[in-house]
Length: 425
Image (cartoon, helix red, strand yellow):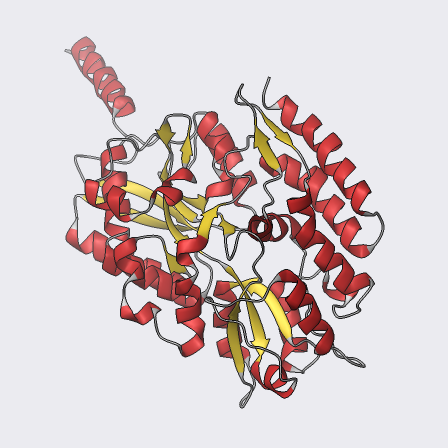
């Protein structure tokens, strides 16, 4: 009897070891969802949706885990290596390539409904497709716009651009000069993170920077189209003095006090910054949203949508995909967009009247949605390292005047291709 009892105890331990760590004693499945929502309104919206799911699906419980945009790449890398990754991963599409190619994310092909697949345009799915697999669902996107001091623009009697008749980059430079004067600047460029801003805006001028050959390998080539936007920024700072050098190392939020004080007339910012401006602007301050300047490619610009993915190690991929489907129902996608002050990727959500009001510039942003394209670096393996080690310091030095345009080209091409080559052997 003693031997039998020991054998039964060992068997029970073995069975316990084989059971899923996220489903105990026949109870509900538990999925860990790491969200990068950070603004109070957006955090509240996501948490509300998690509560609604849990109330409707007691058999599949979702745990909310707070993440951070500042550290997400390194944090996920460590989590994947240690087998501690969340089941449902919130990230941006330009951060997915290495994780997808490295087998860290699940291929969602066959796990998503036809409704969701058809609702998001092909350009959105291109941002999350690597090889023959789909490794995320793009759900929020953010065009870059000009936030302008409406009073100063009208006092200067400049033409106000619209999505139907935007400024060219040349006209934008002229307007910035006209709005400048002693102690006042027409524009301030907050370029603490200069790479994505420069590359995405350069799509309007025909810039691509990354070129894929017949063998599938990517090389950096800095062409005339890639030079237009950097040259405008450089010349506004160094030649026109219509933009201050002091903001080049700043984040977008750092420039808001100067904007409210009348030091800067325009700020090129992501669409979501409208929330901070609406909350912080002093009483009586009039501001408006203008489209970014257009080049030969019109208002086209690159975006890296926010994404929801499933970890390859998640033992309940169908349930995780079902939760993503719930979050991205059209009504819920609108709630997420309003909470983050961004644009939804879904066609049905984009038609919601709440996103077409003139208040706080919603209509201007929504008018740009059809011109958003995958960011140039979207599928480039090694992009995070290339950005951090090569492109960021190169653009920063060019904008500050430490190197010229030829020096920028050499750094991006020579040093950049050395980094990318290590990922393409």
